[in-house]
Amino acid sequence: MKPTRDDHVTRAGWGAMACGALLGVLGALVAWAPAHWLAAALAHGSAGHVLLDDARGTVWSGSARLLLTGGPGSTDRAALPGRVDWQITLAPPQPRLQLHLPCCAAQPLAVTVTPGVASARLQLGASALQLPAAWLSGLGT
Image (cartoon, rainbow, N blue to C red; front, side, top):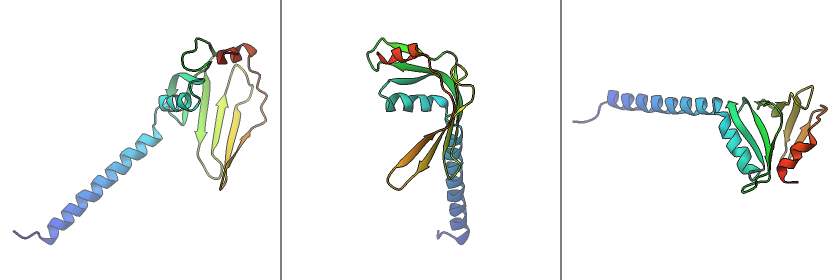
């Protein structure tokens, strides 16, 4: 039996629906990516020296306990008192990270990234940040 024009339209319709469903799932996965993915990326990127413990929320808006460690195999570890909240915005032209450190800063700390052709520029907002000296002992100092 020879395929008809309606068979091709039906196959094309199913393909478009499958493609749309896949794009929807990928979009939802990005939008609702769990905060522990960010914690894993930070731990890997810092070679285990900076950890987000008990991460909650999403990659884009969440909270965790911020720990400094001496790295893999080290017993040195120190946590900031309380939790750190973050908000990541990717809106053009400058992606922005806002950190709220209730223990150490009266105002949220804003970090903006200015992308460039060969490099990117990182800029910290003008917030007073007072970190406990004992916290640095977590790095093994």
